[in-house]
Amino acid sequence: MKNREAPSFEQKRYVAAVCPEYSPVNQGFVNKSVEMEDDSCDICLHWNDGKCVIFDEVLTGLDQT
Image 1: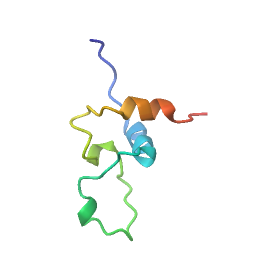
Image 2: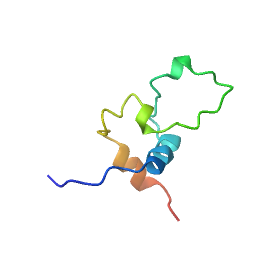
Image 3: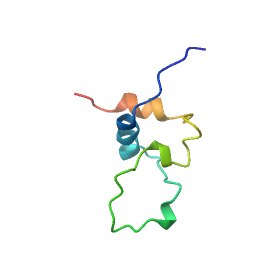
Image 4: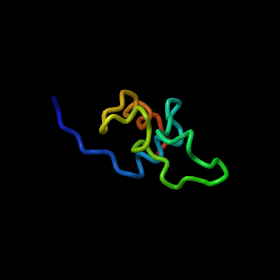
C-alpha cells in the first residue's frame, strides 16, 4: 500500500464546500446565521481520522484551474 501525503487544510475546506456527503458533526448545534470559517472535512461525520471514502474522488473532481 502506498503512503500519501495528508491533505492540506485548504484542500479539506474546498472538498467540504462541494462534497455531496458533507455533514458537520455539530450541525444541530450551529447557529445558521453565523458563517463558520472552519468548515472542513475535519468536522465531517464521514472523516474518520482522515479516511473518507469519497475525499479523493471529490478532490480530483474540483476544477483547479
